[in-house]
Image 1 (cartoon, rainbow, N blue to C red):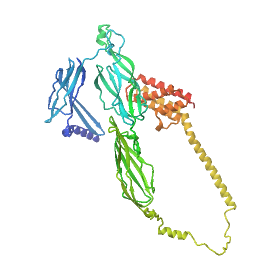
Image 2: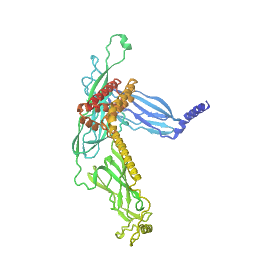
Image 3: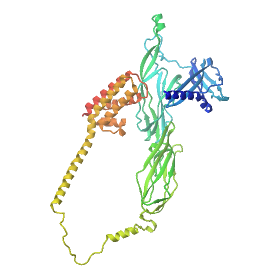
Image 4: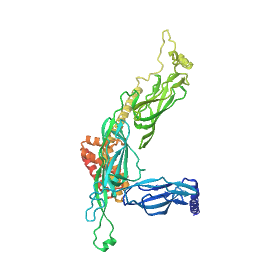
Length: 608
């Protein structure tokens, strides 16, 4: 009990001291407001700070009507993690605004004073638009009993940052969802990017925005962003991304009685719709002719840094050359430069390490190559510089970077061995070697030998034949055992294939348990384990080679139709997407049924 009260006392004291701890911290002061609104729309501008204000001077909303504000609100949150307490306080000044005419309205800076210091927000502009009216508005008409959704109330666009690039130069494609009604995502089918090497980017940092498109105002969300590296020249097409969404339309309720007016809430109807992006064509130019001989396909802007070995090394001992290529471009495809070494040097397999950062501007980071080398012959060597050639798409030229030449002195090893390259003379013998040589070769006796039998020979007697038979028997037993082990290893793939259906059914039962408890994340994780595990065990595909294209090809090779193979891949894609996007609960039942059905069909086609 004493320990419990001590912990409570420490937590209270820490909470009281938190404001003093934050005394010297920088104050945050920012404004949250839409930059595009409709004429007549009522919206809010919020000025937020994380420190208690002494004075607040609001901005000037030129031409806009201030319906309310500023209203000050305070929110506090305290969290204790592993005994560490953190407290966050937010002070928000809120304005309710309205633009009654079309045009641009300038909002001046707001001024905040905290502990005698002044903080300001940046001025910004709000654009008010008169939206184009279209038939079939997304909110539904009062005289209609059926929910209506305008064709352009939900859109998805694929936006690329450039449409003409060189081979190997990255293209950023952003998939942006435009909506004017609330909706949920049901499923998604992502493009395969034929002709491109793709790298997915993180879109968690993109907040929702409001944008004007074709005369209408939309809430926009970035749902995916990829970097595409074209692998061939010509006109390449980015295939459409397809989404299945459920829009939630607010209907005007039928007035039956005054009781309905009092108790009745909004009538929300769900409308399903499939949307897709338009195909995007990318013109890929081939790299210019006349590439240097050392060019291996690197495209971007790179630097080379070499870590030279020690100035002196012993013969027959290992040392390492280090090369780091850093910059931006198609770094994952950069190959290790060739190392030019004398004939008496032995080079072994190159070790590669990398640190890559995928950003909207490209892939940044480095790839480091380590070359293990052994020098066999002593002497002085002048090693040639290491060169690396890449194509710079901004300058449209081939660039070559190189390291400094290295002078290396190879000393004889500890035994005194190791030849020299001076005068092409190899001195490989020490004094000890000469003494051993003198004892090893004896003088030949010239007179007649006098030989006599000494003891009995082991060769030819009974024990010799028994030992020989034992060796043969032991060899036969060892041969049978090795064949049995090899056969068991060969049959391990067959055993896994036979157990694939049983293991998949166990994982389906686990997914069903998650479905009944409405645990969507656990459900889709078990479904993915069941689908990937079954196909890996059944087709003997290691996890490192389990890609959607490889699985599709292997299924077709084994007599599965292209439609059924694609349906299997579609279920996997849907489960992967549903792990991070909310989906309707009823959809889990459909995914579960489709997964069990398609595994059963594959089991009947592929066979036991």
